[in-house]
Image (cartoon, rainbow, N blue to C red; front, side, top):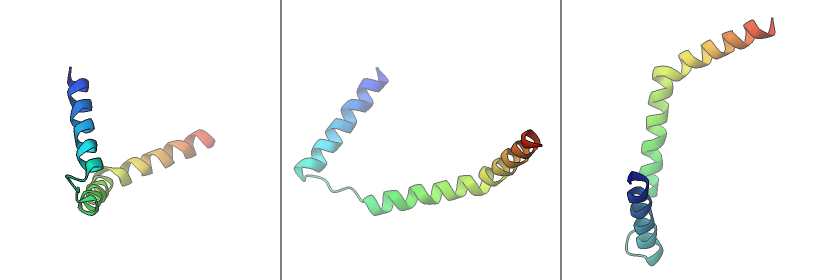
Length: 61
């Protein structure tokens, strides 16, 4: 199944890192993930947060 294949790939990758055969660019990966998170928040997050706060104020009133 797909879950088994994904698990096998992750085990192999962790094994390569543990044995020292591969050193992933962690800084670049984290930077890309943070950039993507900021882009998603800029596009949708602020709107969703405003709606949530408005709904909570309505419930509290």
